Image 1 (tube, rainbow, N blue to C red):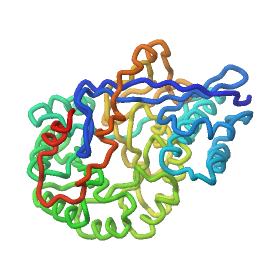
Image 2: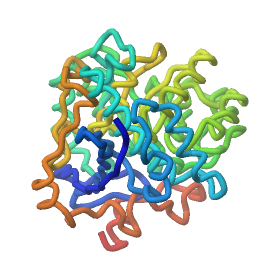
Image 3: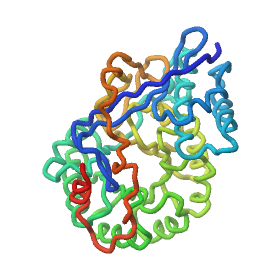
Image 4: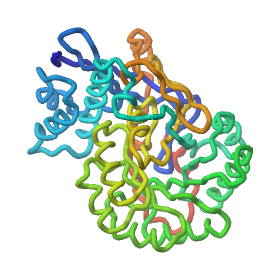
Length: 389
């Protein structure tokens, strides 16, 4: 079997509510979900989800190759963009192709991907994470009840701008998840919105009342020294790494003792996750994949010895994308279909095209001008609404 071509599709996730973080949010809750399909000479196809960045430049590394050579093909793609570099959005293109390659590999073996990767158990522990920053406090319980009903005992909220608001919401989710356990695991994600002293002050104050399991992306993703200082200054673990595009970006954090939980962005693909998990394991650190819209990386999480918990952001699938798994018992139960469990309805996806707004200029992917420079808490939701959303 040889790789002969690829095509791209873009569907949407309809969250049914505002979605985002302290850097911004999408009012209508409709976001892009890019898909990639690798085609082969015998008609078998592999599906990846994540990014369309630089696919035309990357594909010559794959054309004519046997798709089973997943690790080698990952490195061929990196080598193909050697001069310009593979970091940033390009790494998302590598990841999308990589997911599709692993899908093909498992389909050729006629087994689910978690089996191909060597997992013994189809169950993968998870935590609730609804990207709920713009959901009012009074609606938070109703939103998260679905995760509680599915047995979840841990939850992450977005915050970092307003200490009082963060405390209120942590109380709400703590009380809600006590339906399943006396001591729910509570996580706070600041999305790189603090400077070093802001992080210490904010976390220390919250720790007067809450036993935080981790604080996520408290500082800029590359600030190894700052995060090393922070993890020695607070009780909570420091979790970071989702935006690092390559092991070479992770290494300084590990060398500095700056990370307690190694996070890996799901959109970077299966091969990168496996490699990052191995490096974390060598440092006796747990690994946790971030981002969950039907991600094939869930299968890889089932196969590594140091997986902690994956992020489940939504209990529904993107439009036209069908998944072979169940969210239950506080985690994800992977299915038995050959491959990564993704199948696509191209007609439904075509109907949904053009509805999304995740890439708006003022949305969550744009760092605010005053991030890390605020002297006092501010009304983030009021500020964002005044900017035209």
